[in-house]
Image 1 (cartoon, helix red, strand yellow):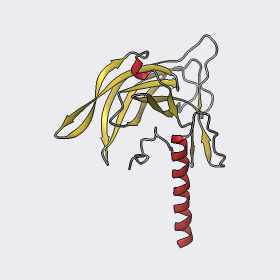
Image 2: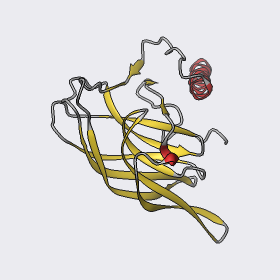
Image 3: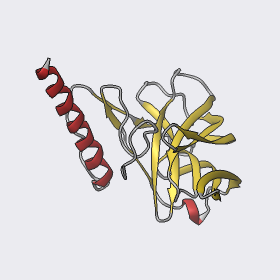
Image 4: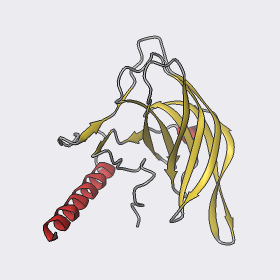
Length: 196
C-alpha cells in the first residue's frame, strides 16, 4: 500500500513538473514522449478558406475555491469538416502583453457547424476572451471587466470586442497535449492556480 501511495505521489509530482515546464518553456519546446500522451492539432484550412465563429453567449462564473471561469456559447463553422478527434478549436484569454488558450475538441466529426459550449479559467488581469481557430486566429471576442464589491473582485462581460483590437493582438499560447486524459497548463479550468 505504501508503494502504491509513493507511486501516486511521484506521478503527481511528475505531472506538476510537466505542467510548470510547459508554462515556462519557449514556444519551440518539444512535446514530451509518453505512451499516455494525447496530442491536439489545430484544424488546418486549405488556401483561400478560413473558419468562422461567433460568441453568442458568455457568462462569468465563480467555481469552488474562488476560481474565475467564463462560459462561452455560440457557433464554430470550420473551413472543412474535421476528420480526427485530435483536431481542435479553442478559447483564448488575453491579459496585458500575453495570452493563453484552451484547446476544445470538436467532438462529433464531419459536421458543417458546431455548437460551442466551453469554458476557460481566467485570472484578475484578463481583459478579453476570444473564440479562436488557432493561437493567432481570433474569430469572435468579448471584453472582460473587473469590479470590486465589498473588497472582492468579480469579473463581468463588458460586451463584444473587435477581433483586431490591440487588447487581443498577442498569440494565445495553448498546451496541445495532456497525459492520461487529464488536461494540464494555463488553459485548464480544473488545474490548481499556479500562484497557489
